[in-house]
Image (tube, rainbow, N blue to C red):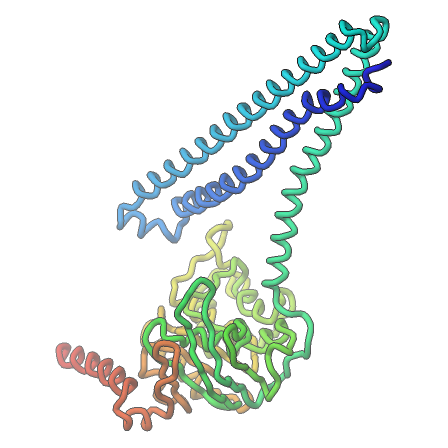
Length: 445
């Protein structure tokens, strides 16, 4: 009789192998979760490292004497990373040692059982050597099986994490199915739209309704956090109504449209624009989704309207100048100059909807006035809807319609004259700003 034919030895063989496998599985799980914590800490360290080296942050770091605080946080994070590595190493060593110890005890019990069988005469003495070889072969096979199972389990955790990440990324991608957005739009209608940001309890918008028509210039005004920018992004198709209501372009729900084509119909100029490390010309043409195909006349017209023409004329290489100091020969622009380039980028796109979200906040008064004169008054487009968000109410006086936001709702709407006649929130804000300018003018005089 051999060891493989005696069923009493089979559970003992498993006892010598399974503890090692269980320890390996727990080690793999611990390594997986430890790496996720380690990776989070590493990303934070990279952020702090980049902040310490970032050119744009240098002046404020020095003026605030914040270097010590950042270095202290950097040291704290690197210490936690080292502690995480140490903890994982000690934990893995302890689990491996415990698994091998229990497995060794199981092996000892197996050989003791085999010896007892030989002494009791359950196995012939001549079969003892064969039984030992059978036990060793079985242990080797089971060990390989456990190792393969452990590798499959460990890789399965990483694959599952990757699949979950890919699923989340796919959910965040713009819709690539549905109707293409129209080349021109006659009316955009919001009907009882509400929107709450993830993780927030208070809605950013609560029951907003409005209709915007082609050829109109409308303004959104209100205090910070009142819902102006959120509403504009819903109009542009950048956000979707999360809590009810509809956004329709010429009667078609935006949720039935291809999101990418919808976003291609909107020119966005934001308060803090992206500073693309491209040439001056490419910084304009990127709004049309290309860096190689440019319309020189359209680019020149957009640059003139925004005031960026003078900025580009002063650069070495002019339109070919690289706008990034990260590269040799690159040029650095001020915040106001970047704002002009961003406005030119939005104008170059020549979209049926133009969204201006505090685009001139970093411009000087003369440049701001020139932009508004060019965009809102000198070159009105009968087929374009222009939405202006601004805290400087003098810039919205000439708008066709002004919407006043407060706590996610529209509390007033109308022309400048109509709103001043209401003597409500808009009139109060406008009077307050005007009084400040008058007081400053009187002090100067």
